[in-house]
Length: 524
Image 1 (cartoon, helix red, strand yellow):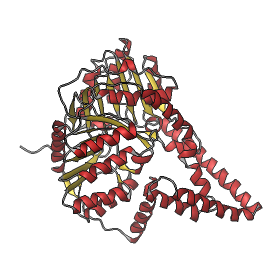
Image 2 (cartoon, one colour; image 1 turned 60 degrees about the vertical axis):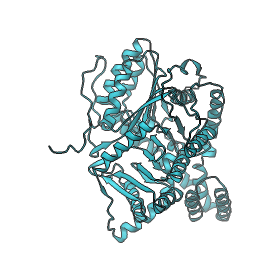
Image 3 (cartoon, helix red, strand yellow; image 1 turned 90 degrees about the vertical axis):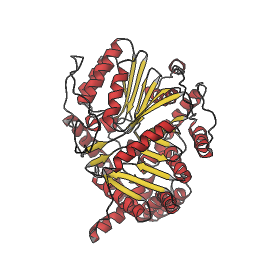
C-alpha cells in the first residue's frame, strides 16, 4: 500500500449553523489591499516631506552638516550603551554613521523608548494589578535541575508560574488542532477568549463564527483580539460588523494608521484560545483556511498546536485578560475567570508564558538559549524562519560540536522569498558546522517547536529577531513525558518527509545580495 505523504485529517466543509453568516472566499479582499496601499503611500509622502525639509535645512545652514556629524557620534554612543543585541547595535551604528545627515533621525524615530514609553507604563500598571491574583495548582520542584532553572527564569522575568494538575494533548497539524477547538467551543458555558495574529474570512472562520454566535446568544462571554496588520487584508469590514452585531466583543491590536512610526512594526503574534477557564490552546496556526490546508498557498502547510486541560489554563487566561485590559482601557476583574478548572492527576509541570514589548526581557529568545545550552543528548527544532542572532547560531553549533544530536527542520517551500533566502543561508552555515538541517519537501513548515531531552516548547515564537524583539508571542513550556513523546513522534513523521538541506551555488550578484541581507538581518 503506497505511503500517504501527509496522513492528517482535514476539516470537513459543513454548512453554517447560522443563516446570518455568508460564505466568503478566503482570497485577500480589495478593500484591505487598498487600505494597505493608502497607508504605505501616506507614510512614503511623510518620509519624502521630512527628507525635503531636511535637505533645505542643510542647504540653508551649512554648519548643520557639522552638527549632524556630532549628533550622529552621540547617537552611536547611545546605541552602543543600550541593551540591544550586539548585532543590532552594529547595524544601527553603521546606518547612523554612514547616513550621518539623517541617520540619527531615523534611529530615534525607530526607538521604542520614545514610541513605546506610554504603552509600557500602562502595561506595568496592568501587571501590578494582576500580580495580586492567586492561581492554584503550583507544580512541585522538578527533579531535573535544568527544568528547575528554566522554570525559575520564567517565574522571575515574567511572573509565569509552573502548574501541575494539568493534562495535555499535542496536535501535529492545524486541521487536527482546529477539529478539536471546534468541538470544544460547542460545549462552552461561561466564556470564550480568542487571540490571533491573523483571522481570515473563509470556511474555517465561518464554522467557528457559527459556534461563537450560538454560544454568545446563550449568554457565553465571547471575546476576540486580532492583530490589525495581520488581519486587515483578510478580515473584511462586514465580517467585523457582523461579529459585533452577534454579541461578540472584538478588539484590534495596534490599528494601522498612516503615520511614520516604528510602532506599526510591533504586532500581536500570539495564538490563544481559552474556553471556560478549563481548556486552553496555543501553537503556530492562525485562524485562516491555509492553516488547515483547505486553501493551498505554499504546498502542504505543516503546523502544530497543544491543548491544556486543568490548572495551567489559568496562565493563558491571565495572558489574554491583560492584553484585553490594555486594549479596552477598562480595568478587568480577573478573579471570576481563574481557578475554575478541576485539578488533573498529572504531576508534570506546564508553564504557559508570553513575551513581547510588555516585558523588560526578550523572554522567548532567552528561554530558547537556556534550553539549547542545557540539552545533553538531543535538540530537535522546527521553525519557518531561521534569522537568529550570532549568540543563538553559535550555541547551536557548540552543541552539535559537543556531540549533541542537533537537527532542524525548515520549509521546503517559502512564503516570503527574501526571508527564506536568508533562512537557507543560515541553515547552510549551521550544516557546515555539524548541525543536521533538513527541508520538508513540498511543504511550508510553520510549526514553532523545540524538543530537548528534558523539555519541550510549543507556541507561536519563530526563531527570528522579529519574534524575539518586536512581536507579542505565546507558548507553553513543559517536561511532561507524554507530550514529549507525542512531539518526538511528530518529528519522526516529519523527518520521513524531509531531505537534507543542499548547498546552493550563487552568482557573484547573489552572494552580494546575501551579504547585504545578513548585515540587516537583525532589523528584519
